[in-house]
Image 1 (cartoon, rainbow, N blue to C red):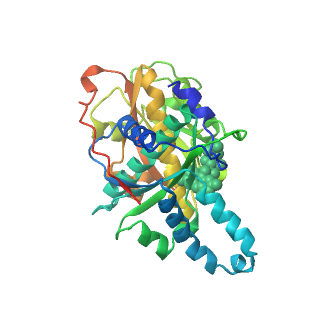
Image 2 (cartoon, rainbow, N blue to C red):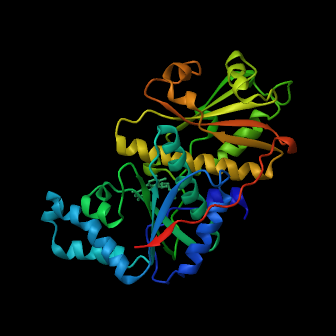
Length: 343
Ligand SMILES: Cc1cc2nc3c(=O)[nH]c(=O)nc-3n(C[C@H](O)[C@H](O)[C@H](O)COP(=O)(O)O)c2cc1C
């Protein structure tokens, strides 16, 4: 896969044609998507597949229950509702993604980040095969009949549905904000151009190049809800270095910007997970690494303040950046089993 090109060219597809999608292809892409995710084995999520006419019809029925209660929908001519039902029922396949519950917030976020990253990998791999997808988180899914249909358990997080199918025409791309405009540097990275220094091994230019591809992540309403804080060679970086024990690293904090609405907050978090996954894929062809972590301290507002994080913002993940070094590369763990059931 030409990773930068696929990341930039992938588009959200909202109009599918009627060409059937082979279930074997979906499972194979899903397996590949899981394998592309670095943190194998530790994260828990599950997925439901609706690919038969019966399961697709049931899914649409459960989606519609709440919608039909809406007073505006009640005023709609039944022909219009039938048209909507027909349109959704005709989509060849749906994958519903659910992050398993966890006892603490950090692990719960790990699970959610994993499922979102796999969804992004799936979209990219599908795009390579001519398969389009729409990541759908419409509030209508927050209804009892739908949640019962998918068997959502207490504490589980519904990450979204990927509607999947082939398409005749991809929509035009809408521009992204350059990463430079979302960038704050603390420490040596604040200088005009940092190429090599004792501590900062990865140039800001190289990181920005990667970010400018990564920002082509899907994100609802094109809110681009992220900003980046680059930390290197300063007291603040020292604090981070202590916890990582590697003196040649710099760090990129990926921050979710303020959002009032809890539903949008969840979507924004998911979009940022996609962006981070893009970074992980993009650095594979670079002579440096970006090791993702969700450390405990990011849940402590006082510790976040040191890096200029506002009370209504949150750090989604910390990327430790450094030159590739075999001795630091983690051992690869076996791929996890795919937890996919048919609806
Ligand atoms: C978490 C998440 C939720 C989304 N929810 C919806 C949705 O409910 N409806 C929709 O039409 N698009 C949804 N999208 C797709 C975005 O609208 C789309 O990514 C954005 O318009 C940018 O277009 P692109 O993906 O073609 O670059 C969602 C994307 C993400 C990542």
